Image 1 (tube, helix red, strand yellow):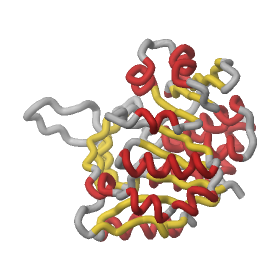
Image 2 (image 1 turned 120 degrees about the vertical axis):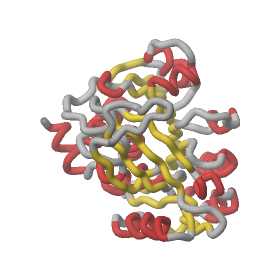
Image 3 (image 1 turned 90 degrees about the horizontal axis):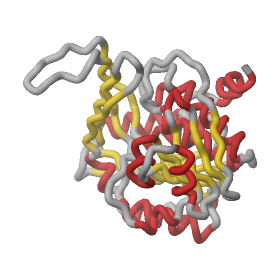
Length: 299
């Protein structure tokens, strides 16, 4: 079985479905709202597990009711939570995704305990990282923790998939340790410049195994190790919201690559997982199981 370790945020999402953003000083009623588990670390760990990988997560949550809720949810899904710290000094993180009628979203975030994840916790999980086939990293965790994990993975030969979201100041070494880089349109423009996804993917490749620029309903463009550039069209689905879709994509891409799929097949597999995620409201609740992804690919 493929083994995946995800390091990153665990939060509770309060999702609002809104016709638009309110103006300054304006109160605007939501069309609906709901409370969901989320955070890039939790989402990617959960997605990898639902796609059939043996999965562990390295994270920090508050020593509170919400932290306990997130840990129990992960345990119920079969995710190894031995490296999740209950932080008594910092509360569990919150986020407020705002979903618009076209399925797009904007997100307000209060990371709290997520940004207190210490490198010592990562070092304690070193054996799990070294034994994994892939390490999933995002920018919703402290950079020193990400860097410590990437260094352990690199030394052990564990594939590092980095999703630099959101793009914030980061050590150049961290990008250099990534074997696979996945960015969306906004992140690609910030990291590579320009607006041509093919040129951006090539610029971000920089000797890596794979660089992918996801384009939402426009599909995904990728550059492979040999310098070839290709595009995978998006799957036609009825979008409810896009929260969690990027995390489903990253986890699925890692699982597919670790199972030996070539770049094009892996990106297509990841695109199917991402497409299914937009058909269900919420983040963790929208992450698809393997059978659904294979069904979409077959159809």
